[in-house]
Image 1 (cartoon, rainbow, N blue to C red):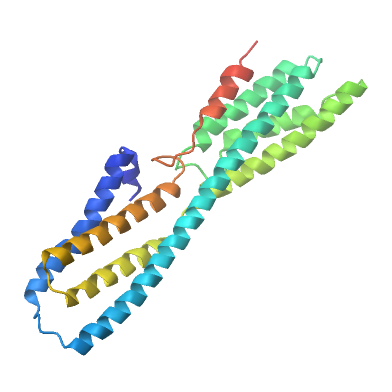
Image 2 (image 1 turned 135 degrees about the horizontal axis):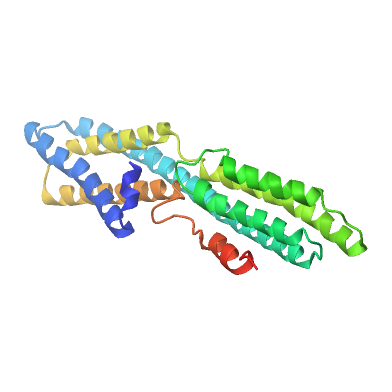
Length: 258
């Protein structure tokens, strides 16, 4: 299903809408020709009432899941921003350190950022993160803990570095948790089943051009909503992919070997 996110966003959205229209209008046209138009008025009234209620529940489910996916995506963007900011603070404090350990620690921090980009920023990454990123983090963390602070300035810098490393770990864990949250398969079953049931109730109406057009609009909008929900739940690819440029800029501008 996520393969549709690998193509351009406009094309993916168009295909999702086209598939939804085909899945709604075509069965309606074919099946309606096989059924009798003589439905009792009472049957129509009951069917319309049930269809409205099921359609309302289905719309509410889509709205709630879309809001949750949007909230998760926004929180992930914030955690990425916080992680980048924390890394920049660590770089600044390392630059202020006047001991010989500075270059080694900068290299270890660069190894951490590189490991995040290469091993943790793709869909196949482990929910707990990569071994390389954990190892790079542990190395720089131990290096900072082993710093010998001989002056008040160094003592202050060491304390701030330790605090920022703890914050970096927290932001990394939050990023991984949000990035791999995803949507349960149960939602897709509910969404597709609700869509099929709502479309099925259209069979009480004649297959004239107006009804076909209305059903097509409903199908297209539902397909578009499902496409954006899918995109928001996949932050590594597609139109809602999180930009990794800030990590690259930190490596290029602030952690370049001197």
